[in-house]
Length: 307
Image (cartoon, rainbow, N blue to C red; front, side, top):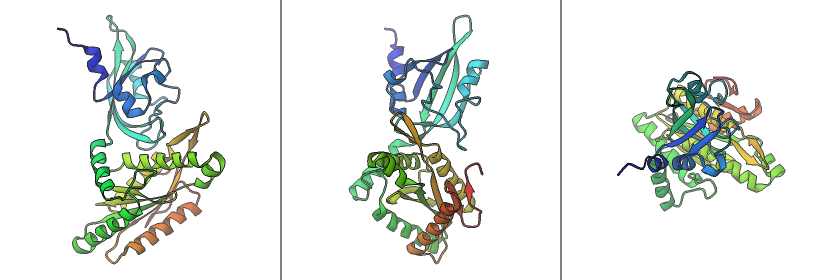
C-alpha cells in the first residue's frame, strides 16, 4: 500500500502552505489553520501579500516586502529559516520558526514556494498553567490572563526571594494607549477585542518563567524573573514593539494598538505597594512624554524607532 502523502502533509504538526509563481496561495494545511486562525477556504486563491499574516521580526520590522524570506527563496532557489511573528486572525502576534524552500518542476525551474512554520508559543505549557490558575479561580474572565488576586501574592513571593536569596526580578506596568477611544468610537465589543489581542500578544511572546496578568481596566502587569536592567529593557521593548504591530479587525479596517510601559527592578526593601508605585510613576512618565514608550529606571524613555 502506498503512503497517503496528502493526508500526512495535511496533518503535520507544523503549519504549511504553498504559493505559485504569482504568490497565490494554492495549499493550506490543518496546522496552518490552527496556528493562524484562518481556514483554508479563506486563504486559498489569495495572495500572501494581501496583508494576511504580515510577518514581522523581533524588532517589529515588516518582513512582507523586500525582506520576505519566501520572496528571496523563490528568486534564488535557496532554502532559508528564521524566527518571525505572524499576525493571527484575531489580531495578536504568534511567534513561529519559518523554513522556506523553492517549489520546482521536473526541469528544476522554480514555480513557487513552500513555507513550513512551527508554533513557538509553548501552548501545552501555557494550557497546563491556565488549568492550574482556573482551579485557583484567579483568571481574568475576559482575557484569560491571571488577575490581580493572583498577581499580588506572586509579586510578594518574588520580593521574598530578593530579600532572602538576592534573586533579581523586574516589574512591568503596562497601559494601552488611548483605550477610551476604542470604546467611545467603536463600542465596548471592540474595546474587549483590543484587550484580548494585547493579552494574547503578551501571553504568547514571553519567556516560560515570566508572568503577565491583567491588573484591571486596560492595565497589565508583567513579573520578569532573573532580570537585570538590560534584560528588563529587552523584555519591555519586545512587548511594546509587538503590541504596536498588533491590530484588531473592525468594519473592514485594522485598528492599530500601542502600549506605554513603566519598568523597574526590585530592591531588597521593596514592598508590593512600593514597587508598584515606582512602576506606575514610570508608566506615567511614558504617557507624558508621548505614549508608545518604555520608561525604565536609569534609562531615558524609549519610544518607537529607538532600540
